[in-house]
Length: 86
Image (cartoon, rainbow, N blue to C red; front, side):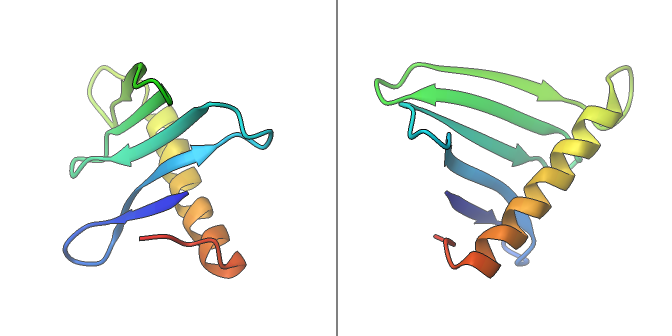
């Protein structure tokens, strides 16, 4: 798992999060500057599928809010457990 940072030092996402059983599929959670979150699943062959959750407008903002919370919690977990990569 890698934590992605913005130029100002804020966390903007998590990349390469693997399942607990070391599946061949990884997960990225990336927060855009407007608060939208893009969730991407991809395999080692390069196949991927992405979905974007908007923070406002006609979308479902509770999903993007919870995904932003998950990004934060994974960052906290990675820094306290020493699994942080940059």
